[in-house]
Image (cartoon, rainbow, N blue to C red; front, side, top):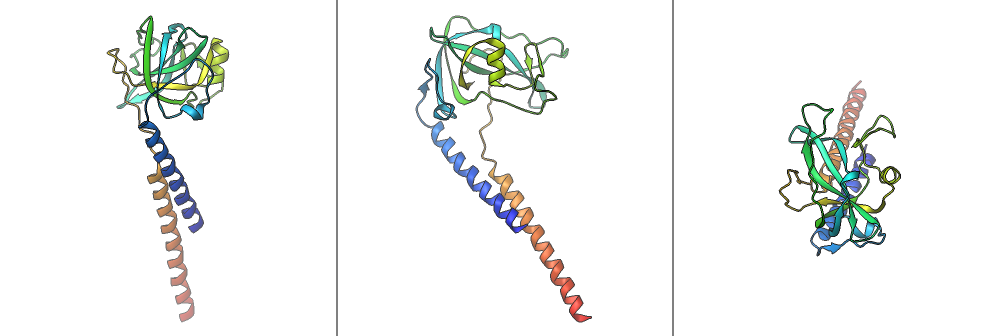
Length: 213
């Protein structure tokens, strides 16, 4: 139990170190996402911008996204970068679902050249799904980059932009801070240490009673 507690403390330290790196990257100047392939680790968690044109025909609705207790979707639309064949996925934000789940909420997509800015993150978003092929038209449970590539035929960057533009388009863009989660590990560590202490106390009490008899 003590070893498990120490392991949880080491995990907390790892997460705190990672969070420090994320905080540092988020304060760096905004960089432009190019139209040639990049590596995820070179851009992840950085402030980025990309100029191009949305391709609304390939918009998908990420299902089961909850905001303040209300069910809805996150809308993901590819942006063609400049005049190239390279695209980047843009998570444009959250929108509430309609009462009739068979009808998707209407989404307006701006046309023409636009500049999108936000936080670069991985283009893979997975939750529990019943089947790896669980895709229903434009509604997806998970965002799998390779599945999206094969489905659309688009050339894609390995990053996704969490849009932060304050456009008046009805989307909610309150992205959660990539919290380190170290407090949870510390809590688990304290639980393991408390259990170890309890076992030690029980052992000592039983040993004393046995000595008396």
